[in-house]
Length: 264
Image (cartoon, rainbow, N blue to C red; front, side, top):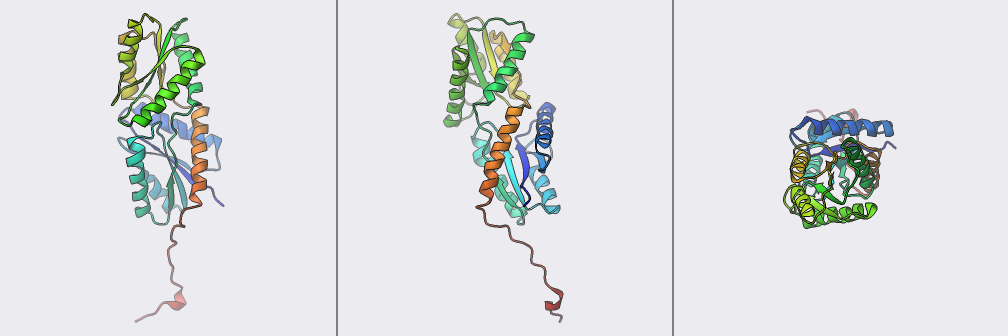
């Protein structure tokens, strides 16, 4: 039995560094699992679309696909855009059995990646002392998604025995700059900002520039490609692959046998 193909569905960005990160992750995944068909696709801003990728797979005879939303937050894109993609894909490609996995989510293992990125930034900037942290993410109008960031921030602070604030670039407060300024007003002069983004782009750049202007002594790079992220992808893929077993089989095309074809 052939394992389902894996289609990574990223949000997409006009910043080419974002797509480059996604393609680098796909390369890493292919090296981990050379037995799987793994492809990248994007919701917006850059090709290929999920329909282009799924159409190609269907034309090659692939029968089952797991679409994995490369998102940290289970907010708008996960609740609205991804289900719409799956519904449209099932309509366009009736011979494909397609299912979406869960998003990556704000998993605790991401803190290992965050720590490595932060240590590299501290070393590069010769920062030897910290007295507060800020965990910066995109932010959402979904309070549950933001609460997940706050939980992860609390765990990060406990790791390092430092006070920490969760901050949001969009749709919620405080912003990363506001969080840095608040710590400085309280007398904490060595504040570092952790960048809880999967790839470089407009929002991580905004978080970094505004945080540094507010007085942050370090801002880490986005999470990027790592063994932890790759393992998290494969975990979500595995669960969704099991869920495929509960779906109704895709209809197979009916091919008429020549001896049964009637002629006028």
